[in-house]
Structures are given as structure tokens and as C-alpha cells.
Length: 175
View 1 (cartoon, rainbow, N blue to C red):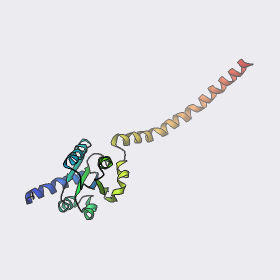
View 2 (view 1 turned 90 degrees about the vertical axis):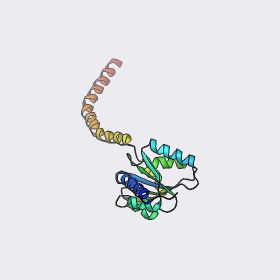
View 3 (view 1 turned 180 degrees about the vertical axis):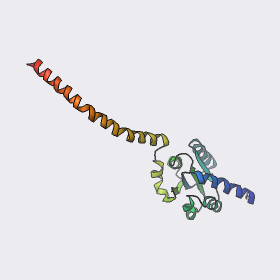
View 4 (view 1 turned 120 degrees about the vertical axis):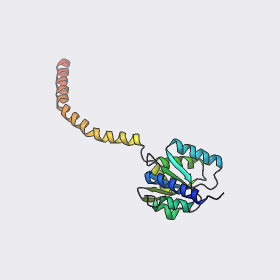
């Protein structure tokens, strides 16, 4: 069923709003997936905070104009599903990669992050980006390490003195 002009404008506006705030985008060819499989993909995307939508390529091109995903315009060819990460840059990549592992008909074609276009083969790089919680943990570890080393350095002379006295005591007791 063909969309009316008003419906097309609504689709473009909706996808454009999502694209303006999204952190990354993945375009994957879904040719050969059943309706049940697509519904399963949509459910997994919803759980991960990923906006996923099948949009006509001409409407998708208009929707991503003026966003950092405009670099994808030339590659929007064929039946594609667009996935936009809303909260974490790697979430769309993780959803699509994990789903593609069990459904070989889903093929990643384009990836865009930070205004840079990557080939579909780079899905692993995007999917392996840390989650928000992992990134915070890494940052806290990096911030904590110099202080821990400083405290250990300050405590080492005292600890060495205690070990030396204990060794002398043990040597006197052994003789």
C-alpha cells in the first residue's frame, strides 16, 4: 500500500528526529527474513534502546539530511532496515551483530558513527564499544590508579623497615 504525501512527511520527520539525537546508525539488508524474524529483531532492539525502522531509501535520504548520518546517503540501496543507537554508541551494532549471528540473511551494509562512514565489515568494532557502565568503570579505574600507586609508594619505606626488623628478629631467634 502506497503512502500518502502526509504519511511520507510524518515518516521523514520521525526518522529525522531520531537521527538528530542518535549516536550511531547501522543499515542492514533484510532480504529473506520472515515477518516473525523481523518482529524478533524489533523486540530485541526495543529492549536495548535502539530505534529500528524499515524506510524507503528516498525517504531515508531526506530524513538524514543535515545530520551526521548524511554520509550514508549514497549507500542506501536495496531493502534496508535502519537501526539508530539512542543511548550507547555500540548498542545498535550489538543488536544487529547478535541477530545476524543466528540469521544469516541479515547482512550489514553501512555503519555511521560520528559523521564517519564505515563498511559493514566493521560491525565488530562498533559492537565492541563499551556500554555506559563499562565506560564509567574504565574511567574510574584510570582515575584511581595514580592515587593507589602514590599511596603504595608512601607506605613502602615503612613496610620495608618492618620487614627488615622482622627478618632480624627471626634471625636472632633462629640462632
